[in-house]
Image (cartoon, rainbow, N blue to C red):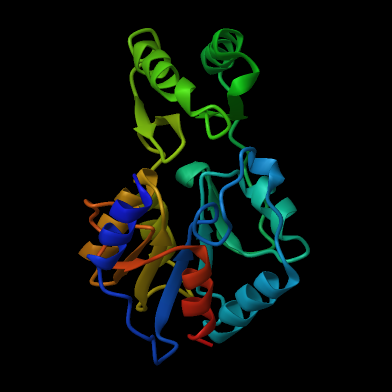
Length: 253
């Protein structure tokens, strides 16, 4: 999307209102929402200011804050260390319902491992193949011309894999996910337990994979907020980018 069209899309949604009380539950995507995208997922870094902001929000909400991310929980922990928050990783295949809970790591099936090897061999170094257990992500931010072929390879693989997978296109890549890997389901799971129960859910995300989460929050009467919204989104509110998102979050303290 061109910058002009992106600006038009961003302006088509209202900025979310201020959340004047602490009776809400906050769910946050990471990449593209709290952090600018990089060519490689490991190339991002977290500032002390962002850690302090998240800690302040977690304190204000009495712990009703969780990451809802495509990263593994371990990867999120490494990125934000020493801060450790509740989290759903790999689109909900992994959960840590309490900050000190153990996480059951999602292993990589042999057929997904073989597919990852095949795609890497064909696309070469221009694409980064991120192996996340049962989730396979192909990042093409460094080589956008590879995205159509990467998408084709993943879609073709659906015919040879066991049933129960789906393809999710992204802003600069494509992912292969089990059907049960859904951010909406992860949000609903948190909303069923303390300290989330009875609060108004608020979810911020920036990509196609976040749309399922927006739908779940809309169904619950919460606030769905898409960062850099495209022309079509199920989110009810929009924020122009990461900087505006962080400023909005800071204003809630």
